[in-house]
Amino acid sequence: MHHEPTLIATVTAAFVIACAFGFLADRLRLPPLLGYLVAGIMVGPYTAGFVADPEMSSQLAEIGVILLMFGVGLHFSFSDLIAVQWVAVPGALAQIVVATLMAAGLGHLWGWSFGSSLVFGICLSVASTVVLLRALEHRNEIDTPYGRIAVGWLIVEDIAMVGVLVLLPALAEMVGPHQAGAQADGSLALTLAITVAKVVGFIAIAAILGPRIVPWFLTQVARTGSRELFTLAVLALALGIAYGSAIGFGVSFALGAFFAGVILSESRFSHRAAADSLPLQDAFAVLFFVSVGMLFDPSIIWREPMHVVFTVVLIVIGKSLAAFGIVLLLRFPFTTAVRVSASLSQIGEFSFILAGLAMSLGLFEKHVSDLILAGALLSITINPAALGFSEWACSRFSHSLRLPRWMKEYGQEKLERLTSRLDALRKRNEARQQQRALEEKELLDRFPIFAAIEPDKREEFLLLFRPRSAAPGTRIIRKGDRADGIYFISSGSVEVSVNDHKIELGPGEFIGEMALLTGARRSADVTAIDYCQLLVISARDFQIFVRRNPALLAEIDRLAHERTEMNRRLSNVVEAAK
Figure 1 (tube, one colour):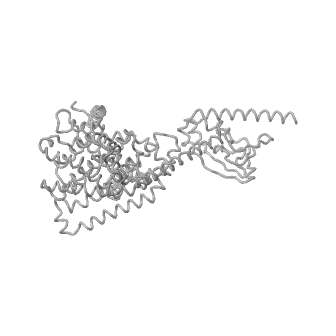
Figure 2: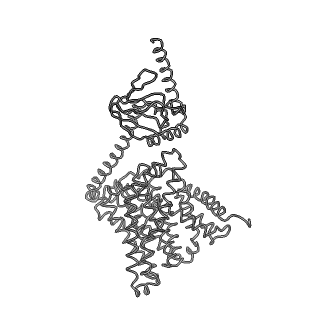
């Protein structure tokens, strides 16, 4: 079509072909991510047929990077990292250094510049969070000690790569093709200092204001009861903080999005934010991987076959051997070292992001980026086999009768201590969840009317409450006033004066519903006769919520009707007595 809309054509082709190749990869027991990359190759300029708009794809990929980094930050857990800090932190940092030196040495042997070799090494040093988490989930091994170590290891790698993304533009002046001029005018130190100052300033503001503003803002949005508005608010925070950090502080979109996720991860809305934003994260992540595949020139495989082979060998074997040796040096068992090293034998999204940034800064040419992409494609393809081999090797090691006892017992004491810490962390998390369940059960026991609310909407309903206390003799509701809300009695008791007779209500009861349901003014006086703790929901919030939850409205209407009948009978008795 001559007048075919570019955006629609690009997105449609990306999703349709990525779906086909992702499904095919899954059927072949390969990560779907591999299928997305192949889909990008198919719609790229280096293969025949439909060619997507690369400029449009790169802009969509930027959104994909933001949402990917937001997801990384959202799943970041300080408690998980602290539990494995003594192996994950030194292990990840040492492995990054060793892998970078190995790959940089390889680049030097091929005659590349220092800058190209260094960035090439950094790109090959970091494994894919997406690939590893999907593999661990598929094998149900996330909560195993080796799975926790691998996840903590990747958290440290991700943090390190975020730092590289921030500092690379400034360091490009030193290691790039124009380093001589930069050193001559002495501006590098100043540029680097300004960059670090901006990053520190952004982190300080995010750490101080973020935990105060973001949860408050999401609470206000959640109180509206609108799911689409909450999802929009989460995405607005992710994109807004990323863009604002880039404009205001000059830091990358990736860093801003990462910290937006970290701030949200520490709030009570982290699980809901992750669940609501996941579909868009996945969709734009697909576009990101497709756009990466569009940049790959498959001819690199037959143009420079030995370069491709050495790159893949370094990723799958060299990097794994480095991780294996580091884990053993940290005094963990052989089986743990094998499983961790096998899980890290691939590269992924951070390698793509770094390669794209390095190309834009002129740090290396396109054929280096093609080698990185070829290494990613092949290592991701090999990774399931590597994990299967590691499982087989650990099984043979555990059941071998020829190995000396000290070798089998090596590192077991340290692994047992780590397992104990992980068990304690798991129990604390379970206790926290049980406490929330008990609080919800206590609330249901105290207010049986809340049982009419659907379980997945109870937390939203609790956000509408505003605590209020009343001393004995305090007039809570005055007859003739306009309805301002509904009051739930948590503790204490009140006296309701209706038509010259009085009714006492205690914990678990509610008052003020009639005026809300009928729109009339208050028809009774309500006075505290004891020290009372009340939960108040404003008229507007209550009306919005019950419109979305007809079962609660029906239950309140039924109880209100019963009270009306009771009041009418009491009035008749009073009149008859007179």
